[in-house]
Image (tube, rainbow, N blue to C red; front, side, top):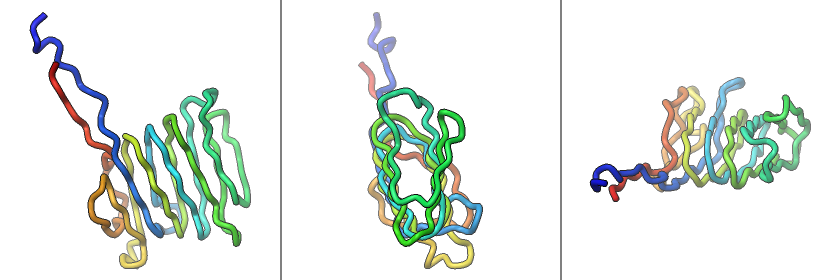
Amino acid sequence: MPAAALAVYKAPGDGTLVVQNGNAPLGTPVVTLVIRGAVIGQISGSGRIVVEDPTPGDQYSPEVTGSIWHKDVGDAIQKWGAGGDVPLRFRAVSGSYKITIYGSGIDLVASGFGNVILAGSPDLPTHDGTFSLNGRAPLSLPATPSKALIVGVPTATTG
């Protein structure tokens, strides 16, 4: 076989996402993250987190503590609410997830490969929180939902 016929697309390199003190208006998600990897974070204000696990029967499950309410929506989607004196803390490690987070006081760190849509507050851009993607310098969260941003770095090699 010619070498060109053996060209393959390698698995993309893992990247990072850091969100600090994220805030968005009621009903607007601060973070909508689809990732294969790990996410750890908290909501220290009021809000909610929705986790969709496309493989709910596997050995990986999201863990959430400090919620004031919890609701299962079928086998693959779970929702938790925040708003008490105790921060809602969450982690989804290993596996693939779609995580949507609404509210205020949102902090998270993610590592893996996927995409994210971010939003902050259009009224107070200096108080809407910051994000850093793939090790870049922190920026203010956008006033309106961003386009899908890639977490990770695609790499291509030939063999």
